[in-house]
Amino acid sequence: MTVDASVTKRLREYYGKTIKHMGDLKENACRCTDDGFSPSVKNALMKLHPDILNRFYGCGSPLPPLLEGCSILDLGCGTGRDAYVASCLAGNSGRVVGLDMTEEQLAVARLYIKEHTERFGYSAPNVEFRQGYIEDLGGVGIEDDSMDIVISNCVINLSGDKKKLFSEIFRVLKPGGELIFSDVFAGRRVPSELYDDPVLHGECLAGAMYEEDFRRILLELNIRDYRLLNRRPVELQSEPVKRKIGMVDFYSVSVRVFKLASLEDICEDYGQAAIYKGTIDDYPHYFDLDDHHRFITGKPMLVCGNTASMLEQTRYSAHFNIIGDRSVHYGPFTCGPAAQKADNESGAGGACC
Picture 1 (cartoon, rainbow, N blue to C red):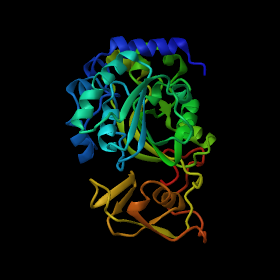
Picture 2: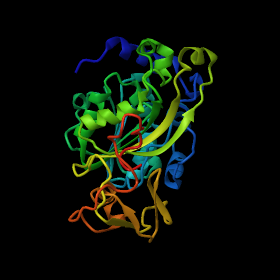
Picture 3: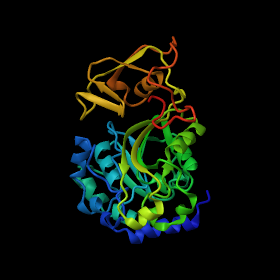
Picture 4: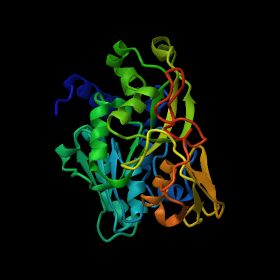
């Protein structure tokens, strides 16, 4: 794979030498808050060494439930905060691989492997850190259909070949596997000449995806549906940054995508319903699949065929009862059109809007 050497060098210098800790960032696009962290994630964070917490940058919490025993890949792991949280939650039988191209950050992550193994009570490490490019997972030995979950926190925007990156992600995910990531999205296409600005790029702005282009990339890869978990506007803080790129509106977005061949490009009605059992840790009363599907424990909820597949053909299946199948089709599901909408409508949010 060919990687733009100048872009790689620029980002390595920015994250390896310019940015030493979160306070060095000029903008808040890649500054995490604890909003939305589940109790299990919060408990895991309390076990991490302060150096890992203070040197990490991100824009969300792409850590789903049900990680026990899973194989997890963290793209752009940096100093390893999310990788270590996943390591804690995956248990002794789980496996976590953190991947980053910046040696200075990986050195920090590797420094604390032994200490966190002891803190988590494991007999041997279940996490490792590899140096390489997120667009070339084969180059670091990640095999086809080998990962249950891929996570990433404010890194995909830095990629110069996002279609290649997503193609690699869905290559290494197992059938029914889950990609969940938090990143900065743009409400319009960022002017291409701003991509070469080292500050705008390094601050996760110049490479931010236009939401509709993200949707189109997934469709080209035969991924017909995805779900938004949350979306909040990013307020630019630096006046020099505002002058350069203030014409673009930015959003911090968390996205969930499953590798499922059964998904359709619009929501279709098969008369199905889903009942949440209340059995996922941290979620006894309800579970949010996305920003508009809250499943109340014990309450039947009508769902489209895609949502039924996401619950029935993934690791979430043991926690839901699905009523009905696809033997009878009743037309489009009433929640609205899917990834393919009229040109004057927004397709952001995946199929079930």
